[in-house]
Each structure stands twice: as C-alpha cells, then as structure tokens.
Length: 547
Image 1 (cartoon, rainbow, N blue to C red):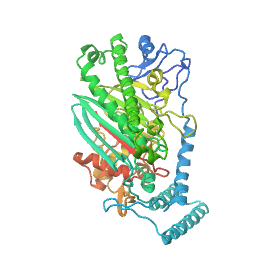
Image 2 (image 1 turned 90 degrees about the vertical axis):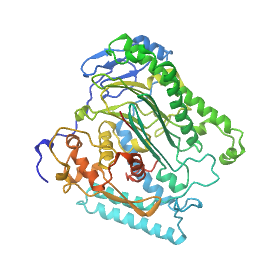
Image 3 (image 1 turned 120 degrees about the vertical axis):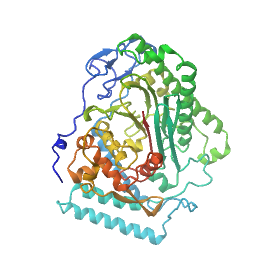
C-alpha cells in the first residue's frame, strides 16, 4: 500500500470533558455532547456553548417545572463498559449455543414462494449434528495453532453460524402480525429521512413476529421520529411498539402545529444565545411537548390493550387473560428543528425510554468531536433487562425529564436505532463512526465531503473485497457487504484515517456498484437484513435523518 503521511495518525481520541460537576446528584451524561442540555430535576443543570468552551447554568425554574418531585432520588445507574462488553461476548456464545441446541426444532409452518422456509428432515438434523462436531473440532485445531489470528477465528465462527439460521414464516393464525419488512424514504423541507426495519434471525428461525417499529412525520422543515422495540418475551409487544410510535409522532405534529410553530417567542427563542432566559424558556416548552408525546404513546398502548382484552382470538393466542405488560416496548423520540441561521444550526430534542441509541454526527467536525449521544439505555431490575414505556416509573414526569436532552449545533446526521443495531456498535463514542462508515461503504449514505485532491480510484486495489454470506430467507442467494473492521484490519487504517479520507468509503461502495440516492432505503433494508456480526440475531431498526 502506498504511503500516505496525511493518514498516519494516532488512535482515535474521544472527547471526555466533564459537563456535570461531581457534586450534582444525577446520573452520568454524554461526555461528548458539548452543546447538549440534559433536563433534570436539580436546581442547576449545565450546558456547553457552541464552541464547547464555557459551562453556563440552565434556568433553575425550567428544571423545577419539568420535575415537580424534588424528593425523587431514584436515578438510572450508569452501565459500565466492562458489563456491556461481557454481554456482547455472552451474546456471541449464546448465538452458537442457541443454534447448536435448537437448529431445526422450530415448529413447521407453511410458507409461500416469496418467503422460503427450510424445515430439516431427520437426515438433515443428523447432518447438522455432524456439522456441530466438525465445528468443535475446528475450534480445537485453531487453539493449537497460535498463528491463526483471533479475527480469523471470529470470521470462521460467523460463517458457520450464518449457515445454520433457518427461515420460517409467521403462521397465518397469529393475530395482528407485523410485516416482514418496513421501509420509508421521505424528503422533507428539513432534510431527508430513510428508515428500515427487518425481522431478526432468531424470529425468522422460530417463525415469530418482528417486534420493532418506527414512524416519521414532518411539519414544514421540522422532523419528528419515533422508534420502538417490543419486549422479546412479550408476545404482543409488536402492537405496543407500533401504537406508541404512531401516537408519539401524531401527537407531536398536531401539538407543534397548534401550539408551537406559530409562537414567535418560542421559535425565535431557540435561536438566541444559550445563556438567555428566553432560550431556556423555549427549551422548557419543547421538552414539555416531548413529555406529552410519551404520555400519549402510553395511552395509545393502554387503549390497544383494552381493545383486545376481551377478544377471544387474543386470549386463545396467549392462553390466558391479557395484561398491559404483554404490550411492553421501548420508545425513542426525536424532534429536529432547523434554526435557519448563518451557522446552519439545528435544535434536536430527544427522549429515550429503554435501550437502543440516539446519536448525532457532525460530518464537518474533527473526528474526536463529531459524535454526540442523545440518550442513555435504561437498565431494568436485573442484568440484561431494560425499562419499557409500560413500566410505571418510566411515565413519571421526573423520569421523563431525566431522559430528555436538547442539543443545538451543526450536526447533519441523526441516527436512531433499536438495540438490534446499537449492541453491534458499542461503545457509542467510537463505534458510531464505524456504523456511519459501514453505511457509506455499502452505498447507503454518501461519504462526508472534505477538501482534498485524492481520488477514490487510487484505493480500488488497496481495499479488501466485500464479504459474502447467505441470505437467511433463501440460502441460494448470497449477499455481499463491506465491513469497516475488515477494511481497517487488512489495510492498517484507523477510524480516524477513514474519517479524514472519505474517498476510501467511496471506493469501497464502488466495489458493490450500488450507490444511488433514489433507493437508499431499500439498500438499508437489505444491509440490515444481511450484515453479519457475531452474537447478533435480534430485530434491527435504523432510522437516519440527513438534516
């Protein structure tokens, strides 16, 4: 590979400036969100100015009104990186264990030609058993050969598990089934939104429904997005995720149209200096609107429960009386408001209940300051659990206030995803770059624009070929995809190198020959449905707003 002095940089550095003093009794917040407001119940919050230099106080009245109960001391505990890394490793092992123990044991369901299903015969089951023994033996051989890299072993495992997943269609008698796929591509005055949601490998293997959902809407140049992930252990959670997203987005659009967009004090206030009282007052009103959306989402889920509680079809499906917890789902909400000022700033208001991820990317920024986390995953009562919209404490005003964040800055990409995607890209501060790179390398998003004279052509022969794996729905169909980790491993590039030389991503996408803005949502669907990550088999939903 030709030497490139401009690409020789140190490992990626993450902005770790504290924006909350230690003596304030709240949970840790995103250390990269240098212009983010975290709305809490405390008498003093902090906010970074646009330059990220000075810390200024948030209006105390705003926080007092957002969180009326000053005696609340129950804060979400931070998730330690080591715990999540352990969970990722456990997920990888769980995938192998699950497939080895359950391959071919799914209940047989008739399928159509459009949804191929492979149900193993006794001979095939015997063959799978032999495959398992062969896999175990190959693992032993790898341990005896230290020259085999860990990356090679990982690729071997993913190739093996990818071949074991089966496809089973959802039974016809399942009430209110969710569609196999759901995509949207909308061009709004405020930008473009593409989104896709796919049924996870485990659901396909078992013939069960996808539990994720998302909705988007706009009002002029304001964009509203909601993403939800139904609880995997709850058989009707798909209904909860659908109803909550629709209600949240519908409420926000109606509320903004009737109460906010024509209020000049609010719309002009959000563009004022962030130290000003009017700015803080406007932010408080927007935060209250998001809180209203969360409440409406819960009411919609409760209504869905009431409407089905006496329905014999649903009672028979569950084998018992229904409970509102059967509709449990997470909920992520974002509102994007372009300010129309010379700096081309946007105000983003977000709220996250449960796991998943909301992140902003500023493609014009330096690598270390380009990602902002706009929410934190909630942990449930036990390890590996999360909180849901139907959890009573999640609907309390003080809880919603703790989960509401407001950012003003130059970010031009908003990404919202369920944990089926976010778990594959942890930790956020670095791995959101990898997600963005994977999207660009697979022709879903255009690479960032920088001023350099380097051509993508010079990278064509230096990059590895895309990896190819069988499509779960039809093993005769092979799907190619680029992986940033593979590019870095085989070229010696770092994430920061790629950030500073986006022509690398253009060259990678050219190998697939797939870039066209007209069908980006369809390519996002195909990529979500087929990218392979060890230990990853959940439903996947990703919504991207180019703002």
